[in-house]
Length: 162
Length: 52
Image 1 (spheres, rainbow over the protein chains, first blue to last red):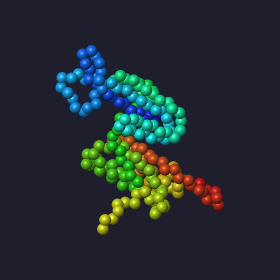
Image 2 (cartoon, one colour):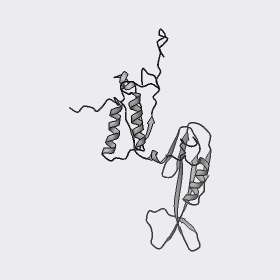
Image 3 (cartoon, rainbow over the protein chains, first blue to last red):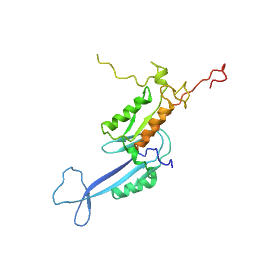
Image 4 (cartoon, rainbow over the protein chains, first blue to last red):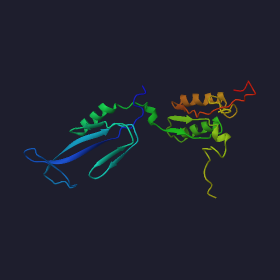
């Protein structure tokens, strides 16, 4: 419970393509064109910098640069050699994500500034009326939009076009 | 929210009985209700001991 609900684990997975000859030697493919009759294979690897601080990751044609504003250099290399092994190694480090309830993937309705409960009931009824699937309603009875007009009104309504 | 009290609602516009009925109907339809609490800070009147 509560494990791995939030988090960001920036990593990359790179796949390189090679041609293979009769004796199994690999030659890196640098063209986007595929030559008929040539045997191709691929190798994948991944890299993950475990660092919770603010960071930039610069992807450039010939290199990748991590910049962080703190923490340590805790760098993981996942040698693959294919994509499933890279992903499995990565998951061993960061852990599996928490499972979500199925309904949370459905449609959610929320809005500020309903004036009463029957207005909210009408919104729900209209979903049923028009056969739009609705899984949940998020609601806050907010005081701020009502009591501090002009200061914190978060539901000002449509801008007049006339 | 009534007078910036986090767990009280405006009794006229958001009557508790009506509100409970709305949630019951929502649940009866297999739907979920997610309450959002926007915390406010209520400053009671120090001159009125029944306030707050």
